[in-house]
Each structure stands twice: as structure tokens, then as C-alpha cells.
Image (cartoon, rainbow, N blue to C red; front, top):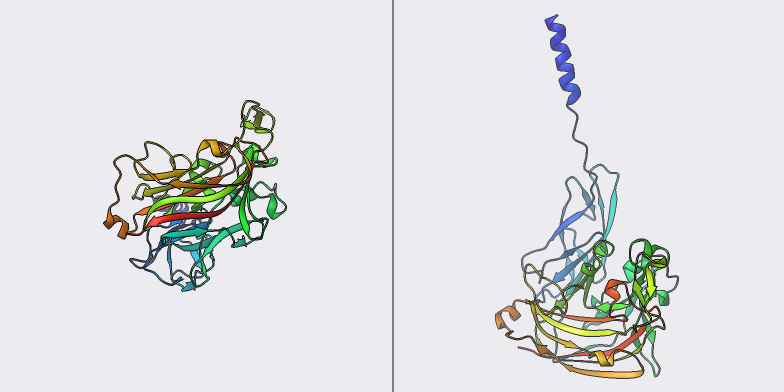
Length: 374
């Protein structure tokens, strides 16, 4: 009897000991490069990574290593040398083999500003599915240096666009030759109102766009800023702006998530911000980029409100950077790459809260930053 009881207990014990289920996560957690290769922390999003290279790194032939979720594998293998003059793609497979995730990994340099740094929006490429334009800049060797960011990737989720010109940001030809950046406020089809985003303002900015936050925390999805190793003095350029005919205020209790507000007229917004980066604030976002209490901001240059209501002809702006009270530049921090600049342009000033006029169109060209190189 005791023998039978003992065998029964052993059977019960062993039946309860099951192997741990294999991990189903397929995520990249962090990126590792040799010391001195990165000018600031990399940005790891849901399906993309931006590596911010130090200006001391002269080539984009890199062999990044990746920390993955437990048990996951990556292809190509971590530590494989590749050319990052174009985005490189990696596929992560979960430990249980049931889930895969594809990451686009981009390496960008911080800008090395001259006394005059020029942005003319002449260079565009298409995203990997050839849906929308991505503006980019070239270096002295005509190689891609970095890309401008926009909300186009988020707008692609709505399914509301069928051509390049249906997206909120695209390249347009201008009379007399050349190209400009065209930013348009768009409706978001049937998908947008379901997730509380009935409108999408056209925007373009130096920085990156976090798709992971686009739905849950849209104001945090725009990461404004690029390393800038000089003191900006002036911000100049030209633009045309046509506001849409009917202004819509976000109202999720109304049909389509918006209601007409006949008392309001749309306007655009164009500005530049020079700021210090810290461990807790590596970039600005839609909540704090112009906040008066943001202690990281050194100076700003903002197109005046009176100039942003509409102009059918090209309107030029020539703005001084205005310093915040008590702010100074530390040459050692400058040498260490601790300062950044944000340039932000949008077709609807309240677009971050999904209010504005569909059809509002901002065309921008000949952006210049005049700097004092220390």
C-alpha cells in the first residue's frame, strides 16, 4: 500500500513539472556599438530603430549588436557588418518560433553646420512599399546624410491615400523650376475617427517619428531634434499658405469625430528651437517643444502669428533666434554634442490635437540656418 501511495505521489509531482513555455516576444531592446560611435542614445521603436552616429564616425559601415527579448534570434546575425547608407532591415524571431518582427534600422549623423546650412527639399525617396515621399539630405559626397521625419508613416495606417499626393507631406514642383515641401491637412477616412484621430496635419521636422506612440500618445510620437554643434543665429526661408475652407474641432461625440467651428480659421506654424539634450530629455516632442517652462530650451525662432493666416504669393521670413532668459552656451557641452536643433513645419497649428481645416496647404522652401561655429 505504501509503495502504491509513493508511486502515486511521484506521478503527481512529475505531472506538475512542465517545461516553461517558450517566449513569444520578438523585440529588439537595445543597440550596442563601440564606445564613441554614437552621439546620443539610439531610438528604438516598435518596428524601427534610429542610430545617432557621432560626428567622429566618418563611414556608415557598421556592425551593430542587438539585445533581444529572451530566447529571440535575429537575421542577419547580431554583429554583422553592413552598409547603413541606406536603411537596413533585420528580422527577429521569437523563441517559440511563432512570431516574427521586421525592423528598419537607420543610421544618421548629427548635422555639421556651416555658417549657412541650406535645406531646399530637392531630394526625396519613397518608403520601402513606395507609398509616400521621404525627404532627405546629402553630404558633400552626394550620399544620403539623414532623412526628415513626418507623420506619413502613421497616415499610411488609415488606408485613406492612394497616390503620393494624397499623403500629408510630399514633394511638389514649383513655378520656375525646382521643388518644395508641400504639407496638407487631410481627413483620415473611416479608420482615423475610430482611434480618435479624425484629421492629420501635414508636418515635416528634423527628428524621428515613433509609430508605437502614434495611436496611444500622439503628442509623444514626434521626436524633434538633431545634434547641432554650433550656435544658431538666424532662421530664414519662404512659404506659401492656403487655409482650408472649413475649420473642424475634434469632437468624438460628433459624427466623424469632428464638429464645424465657424469662429475659427486655420493657420500654419513654422519654427526652430535650439536646446540642450540631457539623459532625461534627448529630444523635444509635441507637448514641450515651445513650452515656456522647458528649461532645456536655449533659444527659439518662430514665424509670427500675423504671417501664418494665409498668403498666395511666396512670403519670406528672416528671424533671429531669441534666447531664453539666463541661458548660456557651454563650449565643453558643445564639443561633446550636447546641443540639438529642431525645425518644425505644419499645415495646421492645432494639428497635434487633431483640429484644423482639411485642405490647408503649406509649401515651404529655401530654409536656411545661419550659425556661429565655436
